[in-house]
Length: 175
Ligand code: FES
Ligand code: FES
Image 1 (cartoon, protein in one colour):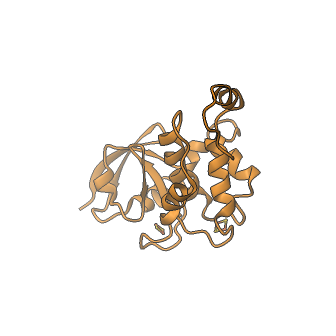
Image 2 (image 1 turned 135 degrees about the horizontal axis):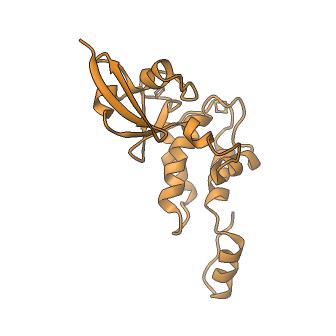
């Protein structure tokens, strides 16, 4: 028997009936038409299906819709609803050529967005920390170097902030 569930997706309340074994990625793509979330493996390996669930990046092919009921879900479509303006992370990935075919990119942006937010205003993540964060997201195209550079660019202090740091004599950070 179907379950009556609700989610808040990209700021919109959604009510629907779902099979008990329905996966969150199925609800997003097939039920709500949010096909920006990709399915690369369906087994929790590739990370193309990553969305944010109550702020945390999760693989939506591993979560039952029923388990997510009542939660806030953010997908790449929600990130895009900015009048065409890219987020700092998206712009940094673009500038560093951190995307090629683009299939992995929605999952990357959703996963890395959490890392960028978590470190905002503090120490930028180190390269090993970025690579560790990326272990759940597979990319066949970029070789990851450009993705790492994109995250470093996104997390780099703003010029005025960096100048202030240098004036204070604190060690700087190369981007
Ligand atoms: S489709 Fe979910 S991890 Fe690959
Ligand atoms: S850009 Fe092609 S799979 Fe990552």
